[in-house]
Amino acid sequence: MIDPRHPPSGSRRKILVVAPFMHRLGHFSVFPLEMAAGFSLNGASVTLLHPFPAKAASHKATTIPGLCLADRADTFTGPMKWLWHRCSGNPILLCLAWLILHVRPGTYDLVYWSDFKSDNQQSTWPLGLASLLGLYSHRTAFTEHHNFSWNRHRWQRLFRLDRIRLRRVEMFVHSRKLLEWIRLNMNWPAVGHYVAHGLWPDPASNEERAIARRNLGIADDARVLLVFGLQAVRRKEIDTLADAIRRMTLDRPLVLLFAGMKVKDEPHPFDMPELTQKAHLHIRHHESFIPDEAVKSFFAAADAVWAYYGAFIGASGVLAQAIAFGRVSICSDTGESGELSRQYRIGLLAPTGDLAGVQAALSTFMSMSAAEQASFEAATHDAARELAWPNITRQIMDMTLAGPTIR
Image: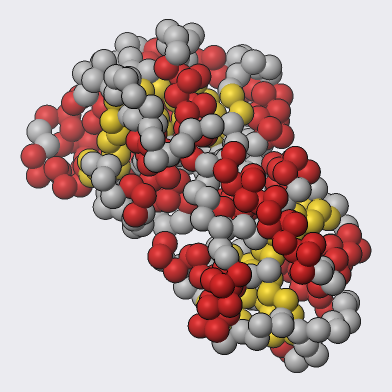
């Protein structure tokens, strides 16, 4: 494993991280910053390319130069000027055009695209076609975060069009189960690589737990369950959490800490009187975007983190944060979350679609002794050291830069 305090010596690789959606909050702006910082800590010279001003920042990536195309729009001429005015709603195409028109092959050892459009494999076609036509010849890799519909992808699978779409491009997936599904969907058993989702180890001490609770007005003897990030009720199974707690009898205080933006016009199940008035249940809402500098305080205050996302098979950024901050998770036994929980013993598992199983996991959490809590948290510390971003990006660099460009 790599010690981020002592990056490897030798020639500095040049890496361009392309982030088409840095102007969005959440994962789209945070993930490329984390990857860029991980590459940099491996001794690479990293530049971050994004079309519009970023919505988020990271203290870990403050030394990484950024190239915002909007800042240069006044200087554009010819094809780039035309594309800028005609394609302002297509940030992928704008980044691709900049690379074709302004970056010579060989300028960077690796061009890494952090995101394409969610759940839409079609968004990588411009890159594939540009490569096929000889317009784009950079050594390239990208992260695929989403699974595809079997029916929507049938023509590409039938005619093996993914060989064209991903021509000379390496795909990385942060979930073993998701990679299996993508390979099946594409009818391409050898495509892609698995690497775990990275994180920044920053375990919260018991002293930080006490301080965070004091600042939030939470009693020391309460059990605190954090529901973090976008409060998407059905996607994050907050409705399942509500159904489980509704059927439980609580014999000690339970604080549910909801931290993150609420989905517009989506009713929150914990606003119901049956739950707001339930004995020993205390509900706290912080319904806003949580800035980077405030994130740790919410995790520090928690005893566990809700990461039960049902049949979701991809990597969970919230689970990665829970591991990073040394907190137990309550997870579905499906997909990457289940795999990591079993491999590292970082949380409590409940079967997908099993309300009784969720209740059992919550009951175990509520009755957990201090020694059991400490044992789980020690396991998260070990997992965090192995899953640190410098180690994950080192794996990516080893697989992409060791030999000739594939296909």
